[in-house]
Image (cartoon, helix red, strand yellow):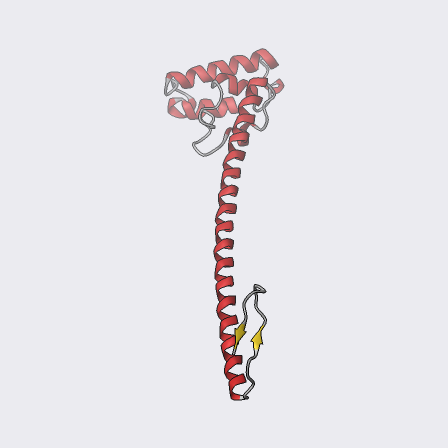
Amino acid sequence: MSQLEFFSHVHKKNHGLGDFVDKKSKRVYDTYKASIESKYGTIRDDQPEFDPNSWMDAVNGPSKGRIYRFGPREPASHILGMPTSPRHLILAHDEEVNNLKLELASARNTIEENNERIDDLTLRLERVERNHRVEMQETVRSMLRELNIPNFQFPSSSGSRNDDV
């Protein structure tokens, strides 16, 4: 079943035997059929199952990244692949650029969140290291006092501080 036959079956009353359900459906059908017949002739075997450029012309291109009567969740690029007319190439390119911009914004947000986490963890680690150093010095001071070793000086971490026992 060709795209045209499927469209007719779905958009005509009585399973494709009656009138079209609305004016837009009839217009799209007539426009697509005329385009296919002008390009490939009226013999069905000479016509492709689907011509994306003719379809895009019949429906006046995608609207909000979607193609008329292909379902609400199918992006134009998934249905049509890469159309060959310049207008459609530009539309497909614009859609791809917008999708890439969204991905980039999401990646930047993730990077920023990770940088904030790294900064927070770095501060916490520095605080733990300082506390650990102070605790170790206090433990060593206590042990030195018990051993009666006077005037022991710890090396300073900044080079200017002396810790006398």
